Each structure stands twice: as C-alpha cells, then as structure tokens.
Image 1 (spheres, helix red, strand yellow):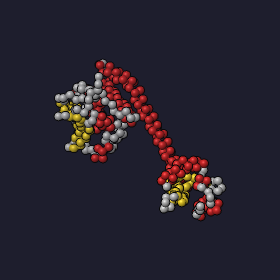
Image 2 (tube, rainbow, N blue to C red):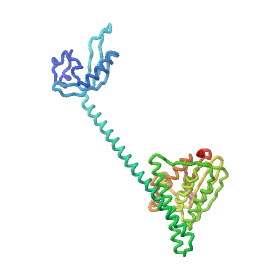
Image 3 (tube, rainbow, N blue to C red):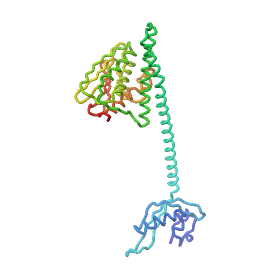
Image 4 (tube, rainbow, N blue to C red):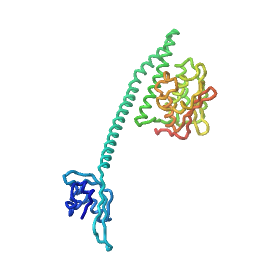
Length: 344
C-alpha cells in the first residue's frame, strides 16, 4: 500500500514502484521459501513476528540484509485490515555475526591444534619413559653384581654413586610417566589390596639408605590395622618424599619416617631438618614443574611432589606440609575405609 522514503532509499525503488508489491516479491529465492514456510503461517496464527533475518532484493539486483518485524492490524470484528512491516538495517549486525562465527571457528581450529600438539608431546614423553626402563634395568643389574664383588674403597664409592643415580633416574621416569598419564586423561591408577604396607615402606627406606649411605634415616612404624591401599603407589609416594628430604634437608641431620594407623586413618610422614618455607612456596609446592626458590639446579623436573599429591588424592587422602621450629614435615593422611581391594 505504501512505503516510507527510508525504505525507498535503501532499495532504490520509488514509492510508486513499490505499490502493489508483496514483501514476498522483494525477497531472494531462499528468503521466499523460508518466509512462506515459516513466517507467513506464524503471522496468520499469532498475528505478528519479530526480528526475522532476511535479505531484501534492491532494484539493481543487489541484496540488502535486514531484520523484519511484522504485525497484522484488524478491525473491531477481528477482520484483517493491513499488515505493518518494520524493517531495520542489519548490515553491521550481519557483518558482526560473520566475524563472530569466523573467530569462533579459528578459535576451535587453534584449540584443536594445541590439543593435538599437547597430546603428541605427552605421548612422546610416555614412550620415552617406557623406552628408558630397559637400559636402566640392565645398568641396575650390573651395579648389583658389582656390589657383590670385592672392591677397593675408590671403586666402592663409584658403585654407590652409580646406584644413587639409578634410583634417581628410576624415580624421574616414574614421575614423568604418571604426569603424562594424568595429562592424557588416565590419571593415577590404583590396584588396591590389603597386603601389609610395612614391607613396601621398609623396602623404600632400605633402598635409599643403600644409595645414600651418608644420610641417617630413622623409622617409627606402628601399623596395627589392615590398610586397603596400592602398596607400590604408597612406596612411590614415600620415595618421592624421602628424595625431597635428601635433596633439601639439612645435611648431617636425621630424616624421620613415621607410619601409623590411628582410629580410622592411616598417616605417613617424612620429617627433616631445614630452614623455614615461605607461604608462597608452600602454596605452589604440589604443582607440576614447581621448584623452591634458588634450588632449581637440584630439583629435577619438579614433578615429585605433584605426583605425591596425585597419589594421595587417588587414595582419597590429603597431603600437608608444616615448617616450624627448624623442622619440615610432609604428611599423607587417608581414611582406612576409603579404598576397597580390587576384585581377584
């Protein structure tokens, strides 16, 4: 029936050139199909529609993106009189939507590439860890044979140093493999049983006493109840804590290992002499690749305490660290009834 000057300016038609046309006539083919199958029925049923995205055909054949509102007007008897159509310029909005879609697609592509890169890197770490085990086992076997032989004092010191290095490398491999598994989604896995924990704990202590004969490691073990746990994982946790104490503790001062059952909990602690640890260092101590200030040269990969925390978490337990009175105490505490043995 009529169109205002703004719509005529946008489309290039004169008011007379638009008289008698339907909105359908000003749409692209896709827009006509969409209009007839969706919006025209909606208009008939409820008498209006709002913010419909369409492309208007200009007189010169170009398209013009718009948002359309339409409302049907009726007389007092409910008979339709006319349809009022309000059209909004959507050029900027359509451009924004396209850029937004493009940005999201680029973000997804980048995220997928980064994820793939991370997976490849961590798979490489895992494979490397596995491939290092065989030659390390051969070296360890050779050292055991040497330890049984009669050696002079100088060679005995070399063998002790080699044994110490083997223990450290084995620990690093275990930590790297567990970190890779955790980042690849597997996490720390447990094989829970009710086998006595004391032999596993004592084995770790004996191994580190052998590889660090200069250190004094004292024990206080009072395990009076069965503890459902993964013994090798508890041994790994203790090995990492003792390795930390040997690396950072005051040289010449004893390291104390305490293991006990109290009520419904099992607690394993490693205590060593050492200077105070700042709150900032404590807050990041159990994060991966974390080192104490000024000690990164001897801290390895910085995964030991991270793996300790993950093993504690897998057992439903907690890790705590205290630093006071010249002593540093790391404590693992878990409920005895949390873990259940794996089925046979």
